[in-house]
Image (tube, rainbow, N blue to C red; front, side):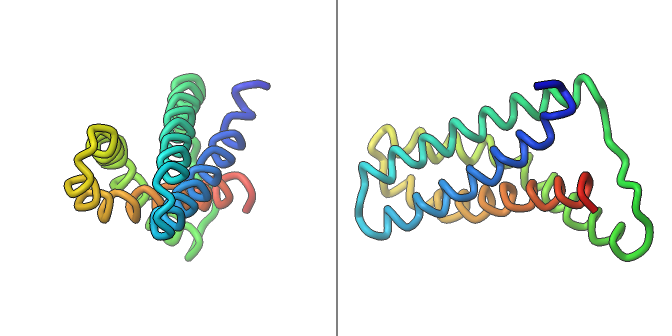
Amino acid sequence: MTVHDLPTLNAILNATSAVLLATGFVLIRQRKREAHRKVMLTAFATSVAFLISYIVYHVQVGSVPFPKQGAIRTLYFTILLTHTALAATVPVLAIVTLRRALAGRFDKHRKIAKWTLPIWLYVSVTGVVVYLMLYHL
């Protein structure tokens, strides 16, 4: 694997996180707490692996310009802007949400998880969309 393979790895990690987050949501709705816990810890680990890979790639390669023009460019930057702004919140939200759950403070966990899940899920899905638009259009 070379540094140029990392964007594909990052997209796979983001897609995996999205699937795990959705699965975790379904599991907790089914009251399968232990399965939910395992899936959400895996989602967190997957997101940490993504973040490390993302940083390694961008430290070595820098910024990758979007080459297309027209409406697709506007759409790309709109998605990228919302993705980036919300991505900055995910580490803090995820850590606080996880800590509350691990400490058994489930009332507080649920309150923040209502915000964390949709934001984290959006960031994971739009990360894949940004990858597809940047490298496969």
